[in-house]
Image 1: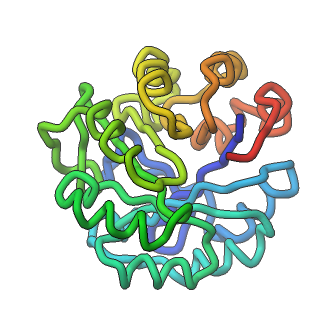
Image 2: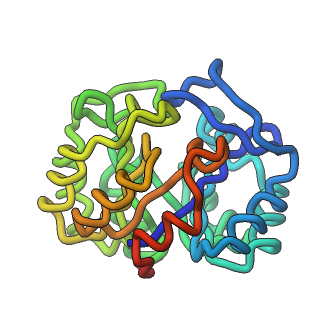
Image 3: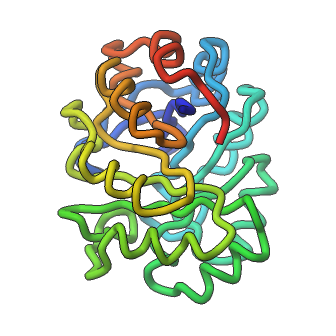
Length: 241
């Protein structure tokens, strides 16, 4: 299972939110590129980047920070947050990221989502963010009537690289992942599923690896020193998805 340290960007800084709430922000560093280098030096093979400003504004915002991270890390990066058009996708791929994460448009315009998956095969990750089992969109500000599993099954008909599944209620709360929801997702679709939200302990990592997930995103627990990245990598028996 691949371990992806998270770097969430807001105002050019490395931050973490609680449950996607912009009012509950903790700043963990003013130099995201240095943070990326740190995780890569500790063994990370892939980084998960989120443009929080972009998610809120509906367009890519933190380009300078993303380019700096890509240059400093030397490992592949995936980026999500505010990507709404093909031009947005082309722009951020031009920043050097390996693949992009799309969430809102997969719900609001599935035909468009399918078309970009086919135009950029292997470059699109479906970001499925759920609250109470239903998909949340637009930076988690809106909740749809679509269930997470239904959306996952829909997108796997298209050439998506992976699915990032986030239980918003667990994100940034250090309360452990939603193992039941992740098990259901992993069993319900053939596409690699990457867990996000609440990963706090080595036992969390071990249990996720036992579910045969494609990957696991870890954020706040790394930044607060609750979880050691090399130890998590050892437990996960890292493999690229």
